[in-house]
Structures are given as structure tokens and as C-alpha cells.
Length: 111
Image (cartoon, rainbow, N blue to C red; front, side, top):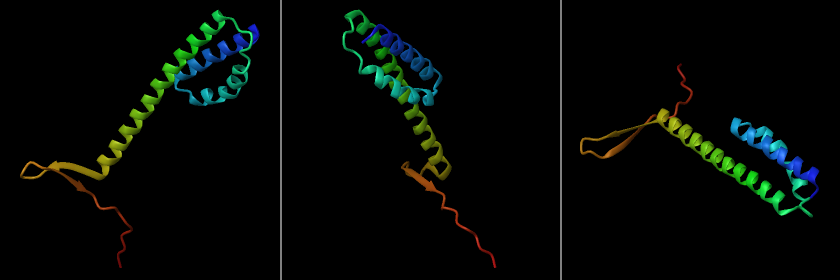
């Protein structure tokens, strides 16, 4: 891997980090082809250069995991809100939890 290629990959990882911190997943996705090309050029890289790249990759990997958790939390919250609009949880006289559902609305016809 040439010094120029290492510099380019390091720069791309910094751009990716900034995009992850902003939640700009379009930019993250657009960087993938460039990263794939540069990732094939590791031949001749020194140990110090590889440690620098490994550190940047580990940092971005942590950000990816955190972003994935955040998206999962958002999906869970949205599903709970959707369920709350259609179903009401309550307790009956014996203390058992019950679900009170709204019937699905259809077209009302009046003649």
C-alpha cells in the first residue's frame, strides 16, 4: 500500500466518522466503493501504518454499532407508538392484563 493510498483511506475514514456522528448514512454508503478499492492495496504497508488504520477502523466500527442500536431503538419506539394507537392495555376486575383493541375502520356506507 502506498503512502498516498494510506492517506486517502485515512481521510475516507475521517469523512465516514464525521458522517456517522451526524447520522448522514447516505454519505457513509457513498464511501463504500472507494474504501473497497483502497482496502485492496495493503501490500507493502508498514506495521505503524496498519496500526493507525486499525485504530481508525475500530473507532468507526464502534460508531456503526452505536448507530445500529439507535436505529433499533427508534424502530422499537415507533412500533410501540403504532400499537398504542390501535390497542389499549388495561386490567380486568381480577387483576389480569387485558388488551382492548379498536376494530379496523372500513368504509362506512349510508343509504
